[in-house]
Image 1 (tube, rainbow, N blue to C red):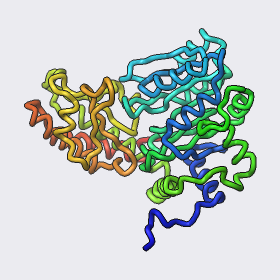
Image 2 (image 1 turned 30 degrees about the vertical axis):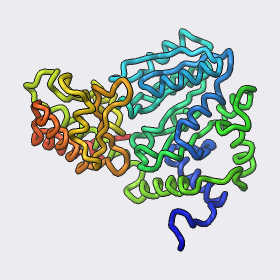
Image 3 (image 1 turned 30 degrees about the horizontal axis):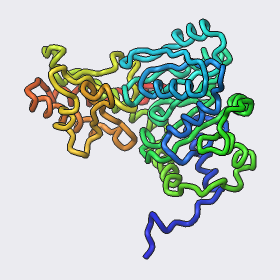
Image 4 (image 1 turned 90 degrees about the vertical axis):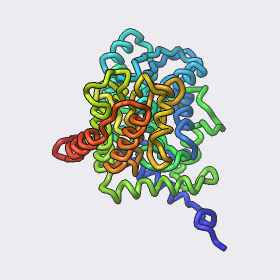
Length: 382
């Protein structure tokens, strides 16, 4: 008896390469794109360990937990790390990065997260990338949470190492990711005697055994299900209006959730009894997920437990944010008005159940209005 997930024809090198070309278009790049079969932390760590070297200086922009992780990897490489830390409820700025680069003239590498799904903020990559290029440093960008949720223009912005994953706005599994490598980045990596070799983290192994050989023979047994799932993610994006439409849906979902949350607790509720956006300014809020600050009188985990029934993309914050943050994910298929309204309804019910004020009708009305405005292509430009 055949099984649709088990009895599949072998994935050819030609098919593998074709999927990489389609992913490159999603990323906005003509640079080499390598699909890695593992969660996006694999190519993120591989990129840092390939480009960083002992004695060099790196600038690490920290706007959430992933920036903290990058700093640890950079230090492991023997690199001197200059951290720029900004509050998690805001975003970095090009001026802040440019000032740090001016102060530390020897910076060779800058690491940056585009959107932090864990905190709900997003950074102005185009402006920051321009400052990095003016300085002459390489830019490594974590675009795992931003790809397909907001514009990602890898080549136009001058990003040297760009990593994406399928599990967020692309609506796919966590077991497949990709990295684009610019010509400048390859030069730096080839010149780094400490870059990983004969390792799962090695970008050079991929270059020598796959890219430089014309992608004719796969250097390993491919993770077939994950590759087919990644291909299906791109299929679905194309079949539902293309990348611009996917971005518009995520923007609309985030705008609607934020608008609903702003009125959900009512204008008269004191701050300690109000659910409100975690990211202070709307311009700094990521389209892929909306983070909310729970009322001080209530543990966010309890609020989520009361609201979520397993069918809603509601989770409490991670780590130190677990008690204070509620996250509404807009990943892929969940970037719909219906999902936003159901989340707001569920949160309203949970707040009322905890004895706190909640106006579900006002929240729904605000969300519907914000969705209509954000989803109108005449109101938004990329």
